[in-house]
Length: 418
Length: 78
Image 1: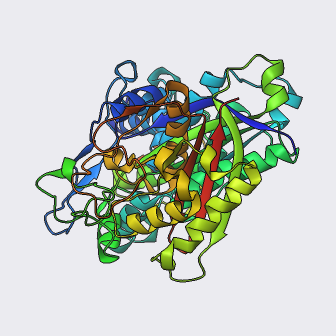
Image 2: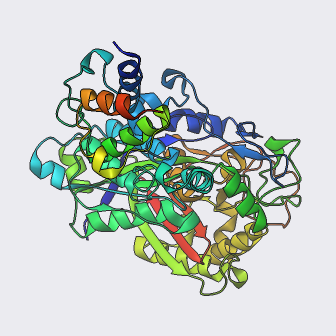
């Protein structure tokens, strides 16, 4: 199988309009959680979210007009605009701009989303009920479809290779990167633009996830305290949004053009729980098997893993994931750091896996384990360093990222320095 | 410029993202202003909204240029 490396990263997160601003916010221990002010929340149990900071691109904020024409933005949900930004950033970062027909056909897109255009679906259903079918825009369908993120990115950059997408709830971003890596490894493409995007901050979504009892409801007055993975007082996740996109590239292809390499995708493991639609299986055994499969693919032992970016959503399942990791690493627990960056940017659902994969690459590059905010009083004892409150300097040569989704779908990615 | 043409121009500029001076009477939405078939459907919806009229599909198909839209709306607007 051909080797696959990451040569470009791009991100839109609640802590910034680009990957570096987001990372600097993460390691500085900033929380992006705020009270929601752009729509009615007084009747919702969870009134907080981590939202994309709008403003000047040059100041590390997100300006949609810099990434997509205004007339095109009007036709689509924000997850597609975020995808366009993250993908363009990643391609610029990689310095990969295919011009020949061969280059274009060897470059593909695989960007997924957990839910897709929920805001547009909410607004258009109201319009349909109030004004009738003649008012439904011809862009309603293409502007909401999940794979249109890949579609728009491929059109913008002339990418004629595999044009694919993934929908696996909160595992989407990880599966997208893992599956895109396989396409390169098997020779279907030399370069893939891969990741996940989500724009779920709307009434319909906050109502729906609250009904599932998934959201934090006790911290509406102190939003920055709400996302607290592994803490005894955690009571649900904080809704996030954004996009994370990487440029994956066949190793020799990257070397031949002298590309900067963030790391190699050495392992990818998938599993299913076959247990419950929203709850993880007992002992998170599905998560255990996903990590185990990724390690087997990577050909490494547990003691070689330096850092894990946990799924850690700030729900009851956090300690189950911790238990699965403890079983996986055994005595190596003492040398391992594991944190949840969702403590800072909330849970961006389908974007989370790819955003966190990028944080793993940045953690390896800078030798810094990002912190778990608000971990004041751990719910269980562990020998693993959960990096409470403050980032920690440490060597990271191998990093693993976990993502688990509704439907019992689990994915683990392992990156290593090249 | 008539009031109708003014309002049609404004809608075309907004929906197709073109410069106002390109939106001349003879300009074809598809050939001159870069619209695709979905854009023209949405343009017609926007005209209906702005002028409070319902434009049947067979009439919508005859609206190809700025002038076509202005003439139709002048003859049919509420």
